[in-house]
Length: 284
Length: 293
Image (cartoon, rainbow over all chains, first blue to last red; front, side, top):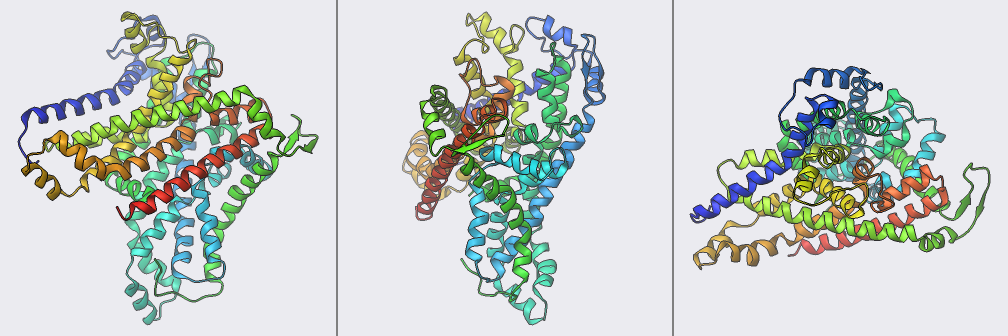
C-alpha cells in the first residue's frame, strides 16, 4: 500500500466481496436445490433459497441410483466417479511420465532429427482434440479402444504442454550437476533418476494438479468414445440426467453436479501454490 | 538456449522419446492427416462408397448459410466471452492486488471455478435461468423482462456467454494478478510522489505494463471460447434455438456425429485447424516481441 485511501480500500473490498458472491451464487443455488425434492423445486415459484430437508435422499440417489417417484430410474453415480478418477489419474500420470522422458532426451542428448522430433511434439500444442474429433474417433475405433480406459486416456495424452514445461525446467538446471555426475561415472539414466527427478518434484506436482483437472473435466471426448454406461465419467452422467428423462429430477442432477465438482475443487484449493506455479509457467 | 553438457548414446534418446512419439504419431498426426484427407472426399452415410471431390466440401461449406452463420455466432460469442471475462477479471485482480487484509482468502475464493467442469458450469447456469422457477429468470420476469432462452436466440447467447465467462474468470484473474505483482513498486512510488492519482497511475503505468498479459489472455480466451465451451453449449442450449448458439465446434460434432456428414465435418475441422494455427502463430510472434518490452 503506497498511500492511505480509506474510500478506495472500502471500494476494493466491496468489489471483491461482490465478485466472490456472484461467483459463489450459482453453486449455492445448486446446493440448495440438491437439498430439496424434485417436486419442491419445480413446484416453487421462484426456487426457495433456503435448504430443504431432502439432502440425504438426493445424494443417496445420485450416488447409488434407484427409482424415483416420477417413474424414471437414476443410474448410480459412484461408478462414474470412479471412471472419472481413473481417467484423470491416467491422463495426469501418463502425460508426466512420457513428457519427462522425452524432455530429458531433447535437452540432454544430441541425436539425428532432434529438431524434427522437437517440432513434431510441439506442434501438438496448437491443436486440441476437439479439432480432429471425427478422425480421432475413427482411429480409436479401428484400434478397438472404444469403451476402455485406454481409449479415454491415451488420445488426450497426445499433447505437449507437459513436455514444454519440463524442457523449460531442465534448461534452468545448472550444467555443473550433469558434469559432476558424469565425472563420478554416472550414466545418463543414473543422472536422470538420482538428480533430475528429485529436482523436478515441484514441477511434477504443479503439472499433476493441472492435468488431473483437465482429465476430470473432459466432456466431448468421452461423449463420443464411450457408448457403454459403465464407462461414463461423471460429467456425462450429468448431461444424461438432464436430457435422457422426460421429467428432470433437478435435485439429483444438482447433487451429481456438486459431487462432480468436489474432487477437482479440493485438488485446486489444497494444492493452490503448485497449481498457480504450473499454470503461469506452462502458458507463458 | 542449449546445454553445454550432453550425454552420448546412439540409441538411448530414441528409447526416451519413443513413447511420446508413438502416441503423437498415432493419436495426433494420423487423425490430423485423416482430417485433411477426408476433407477432400465425399462419403455416403454408411461409408460404403467414397470419391475424391477436391475442394468441393469446402465450397459447399461457404455456400451453406448455416456454416457462415456459425462463423458469425462463434465470432460474436468469443468476442463477448473474451472481452467481458478479461474486463471483470482485471477489475477483480486490481482490487485484490490493492487490499492487504484478506488477500489470500479472496484469491482462494476467486480461483476455484477453474476446477469446475464446463458441463457443470452449463448446468448450473441453465438452472438459474430455468423458467419459471429459476432464481434469475424469475427475478427478470418480476422486473418485466420476459426471459426465454428456448425461444430467443439472444437470451440463449447471453446464457452461454455468462456460463463461459463465469468459468473462465479464475484463469484470467490469476494471470492478471501475477502480472500486477511483477510491476516494480519503485515506479508506482515515484508516480505517487509526483502526485499521480491511483486512476492516472493505473492507466499510464500499470495498464501498459499489463498489455502483454492482456494480449496473451485475449488469445487464450478466444481459443477457450472456440473449443472448451463445447460442453457449456451442449448442456445449456444444444446449439439452439434453431442454430443461434451453434458455435463451430458444436457444428463439427453435430454434422459429423449426428448428421453423419464426415466429409463436411472434416472440412470444418480443417478450417478450425487453420484458425487455431493462425492464432498461435500470431501469439508466438507477439511473445517474441514481448521479451524486449
